[in-house]
Length: 255
Image 1 (cartoon, rainbow, N blue to C red):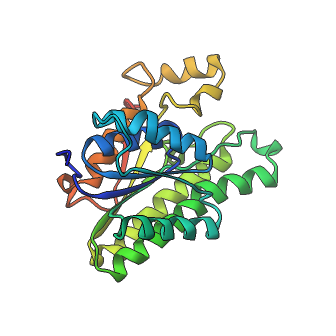
Image 2: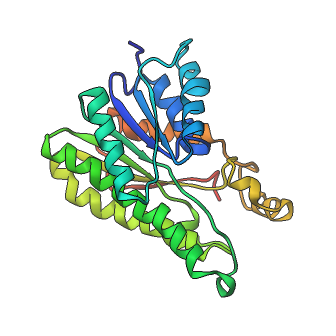
């Protein structure tokens, strides 16, 4: 068994096909966890497991890591993820990382109802459905665990063209803090991570001029790396953060 901060634990990561979700799979596996990589794109989740996660822990094969197709906004899909987890591993996940998220950017006056609803369904409702499903199992079986919800610094300060996204990410923080109060008696910790501008596929859609303006507001003068966020996720998943719950932690380079 690989030694590490979360050795021997089972971790479910949504949005695992790219960006922060993929990096979380890499770091958690490096730290000894068995990873279930869940993503709407099954092929991307498989690639995370085969190409990235196994390599992160120095293995030549994928070990017992698993890829699962998941639509976080669909109750039936979430239920299937839970059932797959229990059937395959005969045990309960003790680490849950809600990293699935989308953007549908536009000026508020031009933003369609559909784009607003889609972002809320994935980013906010999807986080709720996953958190509720796995917290239910943990609480019923008296299994302590750690749930890490990925919010955004945009949820704290807003951003041009992202009224829908900022609302969804602000909601994630409020939901995290409420859930932490409810679930603490079961030994379940719930925390939110608020990344700033991280070098992921989402940031690549930002025009160069906008990106340059953003970087001027970051004291460290650069975009963050997905792995840097994943290191924080691993810390929050581990016993090293055993007295941290209900927190909303910025990781922004000072933005």
